[in-house]
Image (cartoon, rainbow, N blue to C red; front, side, top):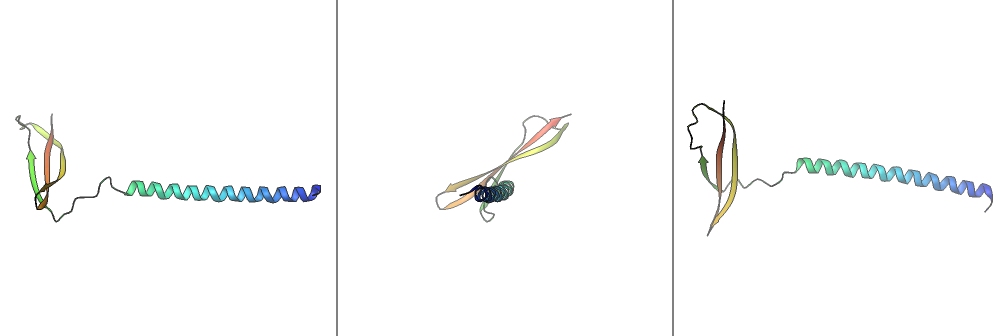
Length: 99
């Protein structure tokens, strides 16, 4: 292999490796975008089925809350099982703030 053949070969190899690097970069970017989209869109847990019977328990503060402002509510859904049936126990507790 003479000098000009070697230079042509090196040029072709460099061209191939740079286009391959570009291809890999694009693929990695596309994969990252699709993974980020999947991560943001998927819920932590699937919602419990709506057709199941629900038992709701409301927990209110024991203190006098006449001067308090309701700032939120914590809701917990628990899947329960008694022999022969599933049901959802929903526990709601109020969060209050005295101003």
